[in-house]
Image (cartoon, rainbow, N blue to C red; front, side):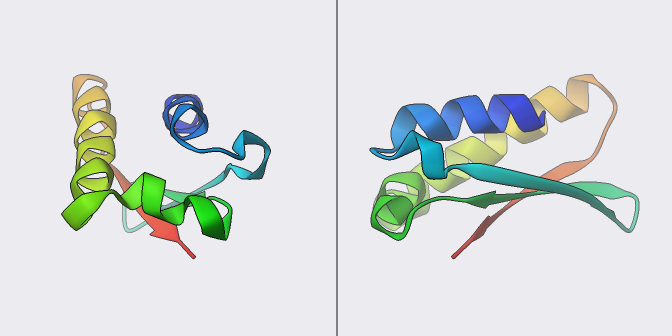
Length: 76
């Protein structure tokens, strides 16, 4: 899951080296915290949050097929 999120984020931003994902468990759910360079934040969030919503949908869908609960947090 973490690798998929890194792959998606690196292909969306101008500064792929700045992409990092931290993974931890919270209340039986895996949380992936995505960090990107400040100038790339708009590219990850998108207009009205559309890209962020689709990233979360993709990750949640893959996790559901593996019978896991995963959420994505985008951190400043």
